[in-house]
Length: 378
View 1: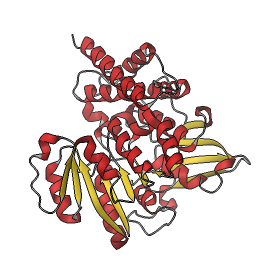
View 2: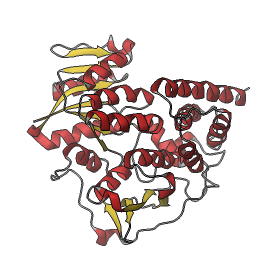
View 3: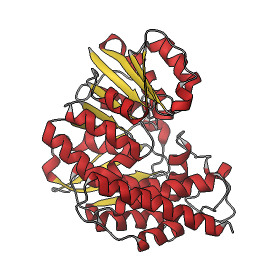
View 4: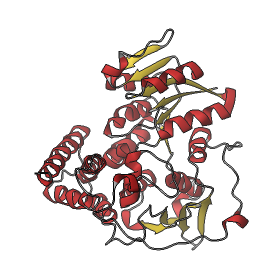
C-alpha cells in the first residue's frame, strides 16, 4: 500500500488528487492533508479519508477546526513534519514559495514528490534537483505539459534535442492583453478549469514562461532547447523532438486527473477517470507561434532563466504580487509585464545562490513590486 500526503488538499489540484486516490482504491491510503484556510472543506475531507494528521498553515483558521483522533499541526513546521512523516508519496499542490520546505524535507527522506507547486521549481529549481540527486528522492511533475514530456522521454532522455511546450493561448490569444480587460473576463479560461493565479498567468502567457523554467530544471536542458507552440484545442500536451528527427507527443482530453494519476502510479498505468480521446471527433489540431509582443511575459521568463541565479525567483515573486493586485483591480493586465520588467531591471543578481539568498531575493521582489503598484494607485 502507498501512503500519500496531499499538501494543498482544498485547492483545484488537491481536490482532484483526492478524487483520483478514491478511484485508485485500496492500494493508496491518504495519511495526511494540509490546507491554508478552507477549514469547512477540510472537515469534509477528514470525514471521508480519515487522515492520521492534518496541517493548517493559517493558525487563526486552525482554531476553528474541531476533530478527534486526527493530529493537528500548524504553520511551516507542520508542513515539514508531514513531508518527512510516514507517507511515501507527497503531493505538493501548494501555491507559493513556501512549498520549498516540505519539498526538500520529502526529498531528503527519499520520498516521491508529485509536484504541482510551480514556485518551488521556478525559484529553487537547482536546489530541488540537487537535493533529489543527493538523497535519492524522486520528482514526478503534475503539470500536464511536464507530465507529457516525462512520458515522452522516460525511455530515450539522452537523445532529446528539443522540448516543445504547448499552450492553449488563453482567452486573449487573438487580441492580446488590453487595459480594459476585467478580472472576470481573464478568469473565464476557454479550456482549463484552474485556480485564479494560474488562470491569470495563462491569460498573460506567464504560466507558459514559468513552465519553460520548470522544464529547464526538471529535464536538465538549456532554455534555447525549449520552444512554445499555441495549440488552442489542448489535446497535445507537449512534444519532444529527438536526434533522429522523430517527434513524440502525448495526447489526451484536457483533464488534470490524468497527469495526477500518472504521477501517483508511475511507472505503472491503470484505468483512469478520464474519458478516452476520440480523434475522429477532434477533427482539427491547430498550432501557431506565440506573439511575444502581445504577450511579453513569455520573453521575461526566458530572460530570467537565461540570466539564472536569483532572477527566476524575482520573476516569480513579482508576478505573484502583480496577479494579486490585478484581481483586486489595483492594476491592469498590461501593467503586469511592465512592473515585472522594472523589478527585474533593478535586481542585482546573485549567481549560484543558497536557499537563504533566494528567499531574500523573493522578499525584495515582493516589496519592490508592491511599491510600484502603490505608485500606480496614487
